[in-house]
Length: 563
Image 1 (cartoon, helix red, strand yellow):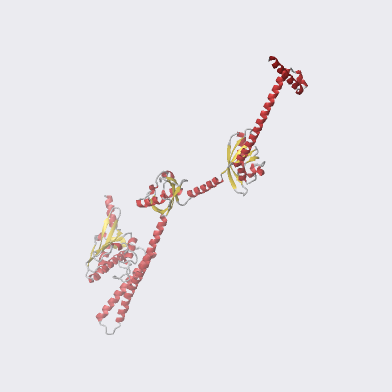
Image 2: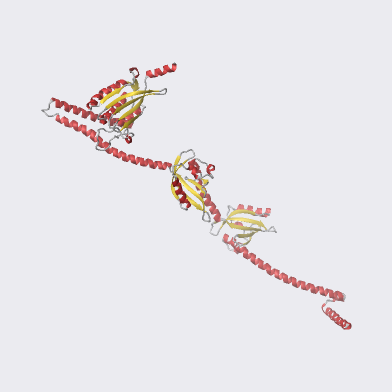
């Protein structure tokens, strides 16, 4: 058995040796058989390793190509613009999105300088960005404006970093055109709100103020800092009921716009009117986030409207008064004129008795006096209106003037069966004052005529009293009657021109309605005031004041001060 194995080994050895002799170069014959076999074995092992390595390299190449393909696909599919730039800004590679942003074909952009597609205004910004990216070896960002194929500006945000070899820069481009346009619109809107001639106020959903424009401060007096976080109720004047605000909140919380007017209160307490539109602003989920109020100060506008309404009412009233006045003038002129003409014609009768003639003449005189009185009143009111009436002051004895007026009006008053009296409250040495004698006479005469006209029975009294203080001294005159009285709603209008207690075209009392108006004007020209105290069916008391200017009074004040 051992011999058989040896024989087999020798045969193998022989075959191997024969094989070696067939394949090894001549230099290999110098090696021993064992060394040669070992070498052959190593060569075979290395050949196997090389085959395995080639296989791995093939797989790696396939994987690399697949990766490159995937990278290229991803590079082109990225929703951002990507560039690979050289140090001088040359485009080495650009993805599809970047090409689309520039409006050029991919193949057209390669090897072109990126600066060609940047506006002149932002090229310096890009140059700084590129230089800093390569020099600092750090990530850099900037914003530039690109020129699109349609010559429309495209605002982009660039972000770049240098590759490991330091010779290339990978840059991402984000199109921020919409954001820029939104920012511009927001800036314009913000500027419009800041410069708006109306008040703009924004509050959060809890009603706390978050923004006010400068007009808010101008109108209310509150600065923005004072009201931020406050509730708009700080402006409430208390003039609107709670139901008013409940309706407002129901409207805006429902998503509808509220339109209306407020009477609000400023910081200094002044009241003012605002016309407002209040709307709700919702967030992305549709929930109310803010409320915005746009308000206009309409205080002057409302006053103008009120003035126009008042003017309209006055115009209508004036038109009515004109009609009444024309009717009054017609009556006041035609009635005495008809009397004069009628009784003048009667005087022509040949068989007229002496008594009848005297009565006719008296009637003519009364009609003439009545017409003259009307004409004088019209002339006086015309002078007052045109500013031609002048106060002519002189020394006047008030007691004598009251007695003279009393004597003049006693007969016509006695003829109506009315008791007439007067009261002088100053002694003779203090009754001389400096004033316009004629104006005082006209004022008292007009008031007495008025009392006679509206008093059918009872009494009429005239007089005056003096009030003295250390600051001034006045005389208060009065004419008191027991006539029909004046309704409370008419006590303020009877001193107006052409106004009477009865202003219908068919009147119960004669007169042009100018006497009290003239009296009021004269009293005010003398430095006093006039008013009436009256009760219907019980009578009226007309009162007016004038300054008391008396030398003896001044002397008494001087004596008191010297003591």
